Amino acid sequence: IVSMIYFMLDAENYRLDTEYENHLIYKVAL
Image (cartoon, rainbow, N blue to C red; front, top):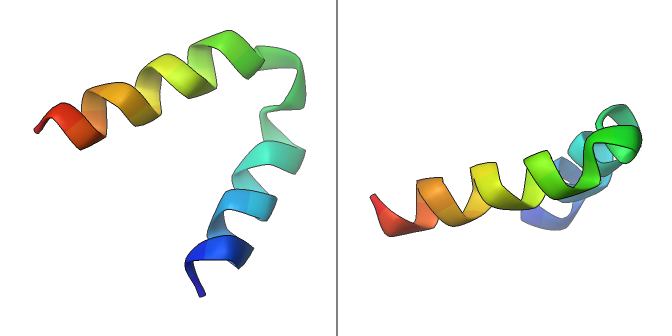
């Protein structure tokens, strides 16, 4: 399930790769 979510997010935010990664880091930090 998690891998599918990552795949969907990656497909939608492919052009915002750096912002997407920063968002994940922010969520993990919380």
